[in-house]
Length: 449
Image (cartoon, rainbow, N blue to C red; front, side):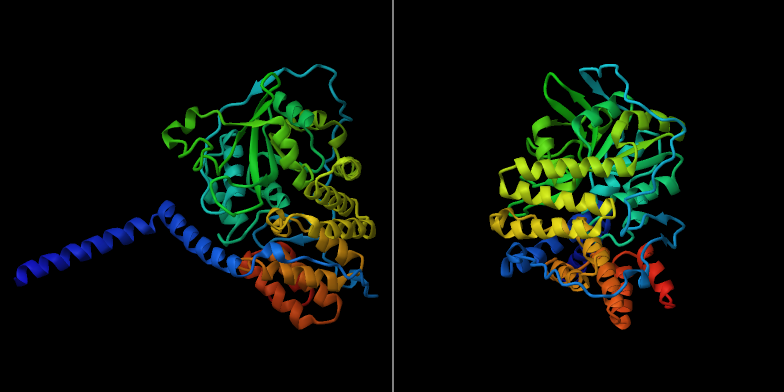
């Protein structure tokens, strides 16, 4: 009897150890963590749906000069140069020649190949999509290496486009740029020239009930005018294919991508001001700039994006679409550093937001976009920055958003509350260790990060 009991205990112990080993494996552990956090968030959102919250700007300005706490240039502790979140999206590239749009008609269809597909780990579409993109240039690494720099805290909710561009420009032998104001013709021109295009867009997972609106990166690798489709690599759909199940990893090498209809892209891309990223070998920069045409410079792209946003505010009829159009107008004006006009545009967007059907409200937009913070801060509306950050952080499953803490800190500092500013800056560094703007601001305040 004792022998049998001993054997049973040994078997139970072995099973426990085996389960522990299996659970500790990254793919399994990521799913365990994901479902645990998802359950917690679902309960919290059921008790108090974040879509109920409505931000109402006060428009009150404080007569304090924001230059007293200059947020402009930030250098990350890991050696990257971070693009200023309060200024232009990225430094303008210096073209060696004035590029012109080629009059040569584009092919009716193009499909780029040679990618290593990767299904994203939990909340990791940015690093996973970037890794797939870099595989085109034989990078030889994976999303794990990219995420180690882009998301040192795996629970960080978002990777900004300027962070992706900085990562490429400082950690690889290729170059990257990003722009607002993209359009299907620009994508086709780049692809036909041999350059895939990374876009940020809206995404509402069909397989997760009540998940609602999300931001998501895709890699566009082809197009076909006859079929009216783009071909994309989607790190989420690799594990959640539209036809059910997932793509077998053994088929990744031969998988050409998912179909993405032209009209669907127009709808989804609007929510991020038609933002796109291009990665290319340095010696091919002029070819990229030629394909960009009027979007060659940051200013040109932002002016184009603003003009298109204003056009959409006058032509779109759906409430959520009009919200995004006005939001895009504000984002483009921030890019152009016209902060007062940007604040007015965001005020209009926020006035439309309550009219959106509650279950359709894109409340997560504030996880991905810093524009309202920059507009309100740089126009002296510090309390609006604080209120928006308070609401955004309060309505998250986990309040882990370094940008919200950073901008709230900037506003506290502008109002003279240095202690609260330092506390927020340090919290932002817990959300994202090494976050360059917060490190820079703490150094300016004479405080050790």
